[in-house]
Image 1 (cartoon, rainbow, N blue to C red):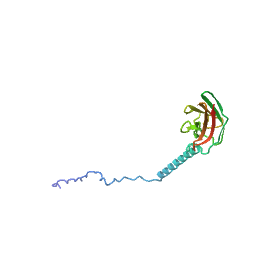
Image 2: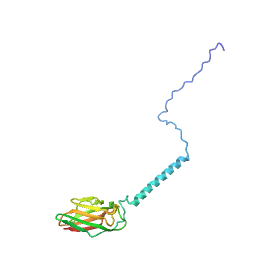
Image 3: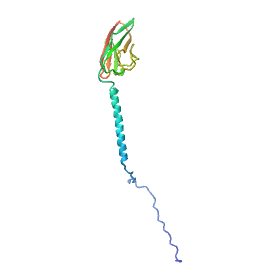
Image 4: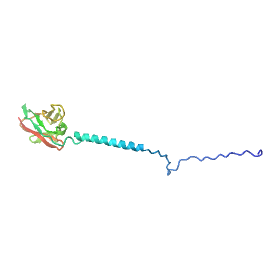
Length: 188
């Protein structure tokens, strides 16, 4: 073997690595499936549904979803007191009684009329311890107990009325936009 050249080692030619053609998606290894993922998904869905149904149940019970209770309370006003001279008259009356459900002030709207004509186009939301304007006439609702509900002892004060007019106050139930109670008077 001395006369022969040493055998040459052949190196296989490497083909360049090109990505597969665009119409062939690469094959990705699939993760091992376990029952643990399925259990986790079921538990998550059940807990989410329980939380959502609990929130909806609370909102429906508290009356927030429908703007307050749907059963209309009966409101009874006490005798009103009138005062004033010249062109500035006031009147005050208290809530003598309120039946169940005792409702939040947000469950009501108010309207004032002078000589049968509403002083504002739409009834105003009832807000305790705040001036509610009806043009030059103002209504204040006093929340005696401070609990945010229309209850016995709460009072209404109307001031800024002028002489020689017939007045009407209407307490309106927000859920159905109908009057539940009213008070009428004349100035002087």
